[in-house]
Structures are given as C-alpha cells and as structure tokens.
Amino acid sequence: MRGNILGIFFTILSGVMIALIVLAYGRSDRMAPEFRFSALDLVYNSQTDDNALIAGINAYDSKDGDISDRIVVEKVVLNKDAGTAVVYYAVADHSGNVTKQSRVFPADIADLEYNGDSSEKMEDNEHPNLLFGDAEGAEAASTEGSEAEIIGN
Image (tube, rainbow, N blue to C red; front, top):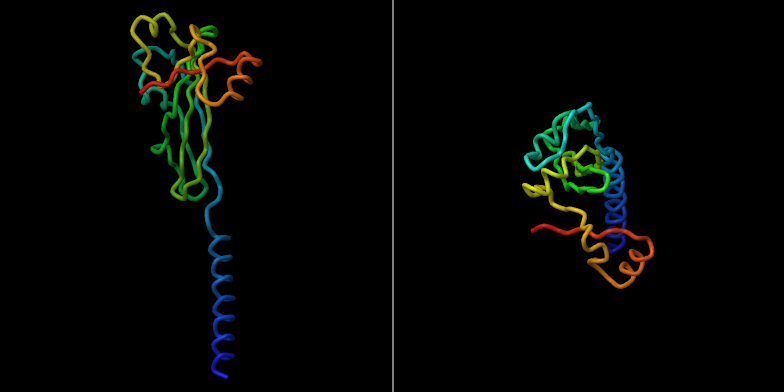
C-alpha cells in the first residue's frame, strides 16, 4: 500500500515538473537580436580599429532592448583583387541568442601592404593552394579554385 502511495506521489510530481519546464521554455527568450546599419564613409586601412568599424551599427533585442555595447568584430577578410575588406560582426543578447552579419568596406590595399594589416585574417594570393584541414577539403578547394586564409596569432 505504501509503495502505491509513493508511486502516485512521484507520478504527480513528475507531471508538475514537466508542466513547469514547458512553462519556463515558453517564456524563455529565443528571439535573436537584430543589427541596424547606418551609412558609414570609411576606407579600411592599417590605422582602422574595431571602434571605427563598429561606428554606425546598432543592435536591438526584443527583450533586452539596445545591446549595441555588446557588438564585437569577429574578423576582417581582405580581398586584394576587389580592393575591399569584409568585416564580420556578432552580437549576443543576455539569453545567449547570437546574430552574425558582415559588411563590406573599400580598402586601401597599398597602405595595408606598406604598413601591415591589422586584421585577423588575410587572403593569400601567393599560395592559393595552401589549405588547413583534410584531404577532401583540399580536393574541393582545388576544383572550385577557392583561396585559403592565413590565420594570425
């Protein structure tokens, strides 16, 4: 008899716990934040820092509001042939939802080659077949003509 009472009690307790989990999940913030870009007249060069790249960008979240102070520059990839720099941004709200976007700026390639590049990654036009990874990736890159990136320390 006592075993039946304990079984009923734990069954009811399990049902209550499931209901609380479903309620908490339904109320949780699962909406990713969004970026809003303003026009920015910037040419990427060796003196450009992250603060200059973040100027003109705002991030908003439906629950947290303005989270522009949480925007980070993930990486910058230069395209020497096109004379551009692609800047990759990310922002996370307080619930851990992440949004990533990129923006293209004109780049002063001559300045970057003379003074050095302050970006994390740069295209390698001298060694286009240099790849990091497995043999399948190397085969795919050689057939598609993709270029590898040099990763800075």
